[in-house]
Image 1 (cartoon, rainbow, N blue to C red):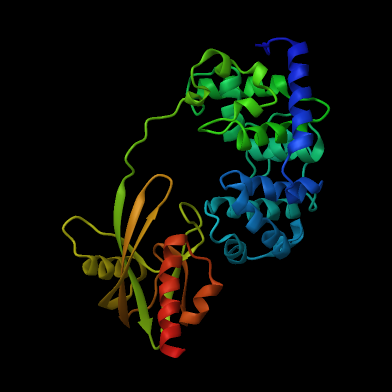
Image 2 (tube, helix red, strand yellow):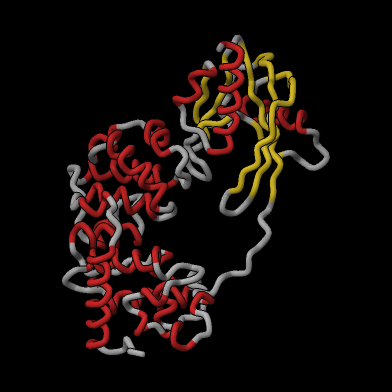
Length: 368
């Protein structure tokens, strides 16, 4: 096994991984662009979404927002609607916020260094490193989940990568390995290696171009035991009661506050079912408390189960009739009465989209 503790071995490592990357990399559309804006969009999308899903959204997003100016001048509602279905909506809000800042304060020009990129609201260290290295050739290392896994195995780092000490080691090793002449390609090669060969389970070590440097392969029975994983906790589960409020053929929807989970998205109003409370009681209470509306809870409509990163929910959905009250925005930022066929023009979270699909089916059956 070759160590990575000296300049000569690190140079060989760079040579091996870049040769492999140039001969084996996937043909992905964002790799054909040298525009900082397009690189930024792709890197934000790729942070928490698989490549096959990003492929569906990348062209759609650029068609809607082809440049910084268009993105900055668009309403957040429009941005969230185009993003709808990809999840982790804070990413879309951060893109929009950063674009507005860049247009207002920097004449629409993307900063070109790691440090100045991090000064933009909505751009964190990871995104700044990716843009700086890929778009501007600055030798700064990128450490995402794929790269952390590769480095944990290469250097036999046994702590969980999310622990501060492990993160410090990973960043130091990544920066020591970075190719100063081709940093963007090197970072993409490391991410590609983790994505297609050095995978979480069953890594394909026989095909790995840098296996001779890997301590986990040579010193452990199974390299896949690294990186160390946190014990899985049972996700908390929350039952939620939701009302589809009708009045004269229109449905009431409200828009969530921009900070927090699912910020800026539209929803059917409701809330958590308190202990000892019937779902119908929850619907009446929540809608009165949050929106000052009086409703009559009618027929049970459907159940929706959905899992988020840190918790699970079950939505119990009821048809409701509006009885009175002027909407007050105690926990929302906007409200509308819309026709069923107009729901498709608003950005909803995934759980609410299931309700919309069912409503559309019933509407089509009635009016088909």
